[in-house]
Image (cartoon, helix red, strand yellow):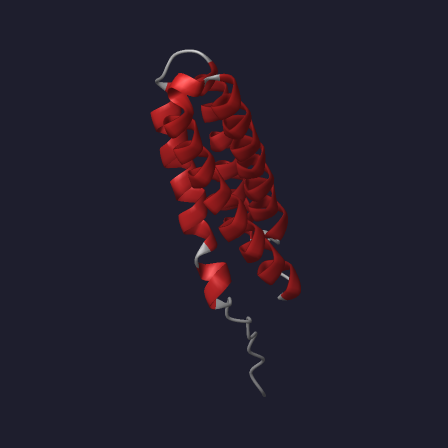
Length: 121
């Protein structure tokens, strides 16, 4: 009698880093939901992205869409901070710094989403 063994494909290194993104988003969410005003809305968005990403990881589902969603959210944040930098000159340095931070997420997560999609993950 021969034994049939199931071999599962090992996740790529980029796929193994996806849970860290989900946890990072949850960390931002915890920080933001404790703040007043619009920060709470952003915190809820961050929680949704983080939990959705982790859920997809745990289930073995594709994660490229979730990581792409993170990139889109960060792109929107970057644009909003750039608009605020123009509208509020007295806070321009702060808004430009936040825009740069958000743009870095847009680029990193955007490239990661492309690589995940190419790998079928």
